Image (cartoon, rainbow, N blue to C red; front, side, top):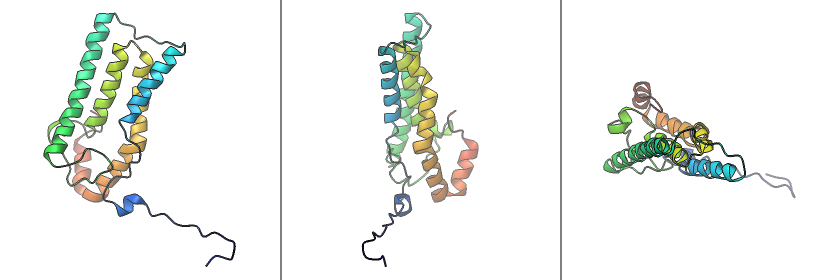
Amino acid sequence: MPCPGERQALSTPDPSATRDAAAVRFPPPLVPLIAIAAGVLIDLAGWPLAVPAPGWVRYGGGGLLILLGIGAMIAAIGLFRRTGQDPKPWESTPEIVSTGIYRFTRNPMYLGMGLLQAGIGVVLANLWIVLFVPISWLVIFWIAIRHEEAYLESKFGETYLRYKQRVRRWL
């Protein structure tokens, strides 16, 4: 019991302990969007860093990266929907999806976001956006992937650990 005039500290329960979901608090798709905006702003602020390639190479290569990124995200989301799952990482995961694109990468949505970000950078001839891709992935790892993996290991145990051994995080 606190003394008169003292405040009692209230303990807030860990939401991941009371919910069947990963403790992801920030929407991962916003990370590449912020990186793209930062690259554009740096370029506009007078520190341009161009992609050293002619226009047709930039448009072709960037377009291919964009298509691969969108394709990876659509394939992953489609598998989630077909299995009745919500792709939002802060929602419950009833089962591990290990078919389709998930046979090649554990994080096809995040891989797709990075490819899309790189493709936009290449098309815009903005090397800043491309250089921010590894930073975006590092931030996504920190805010989402590590929480998702801890949740999946806790929920599915050996099944998820075997999946992790078979399939790489990125490619």
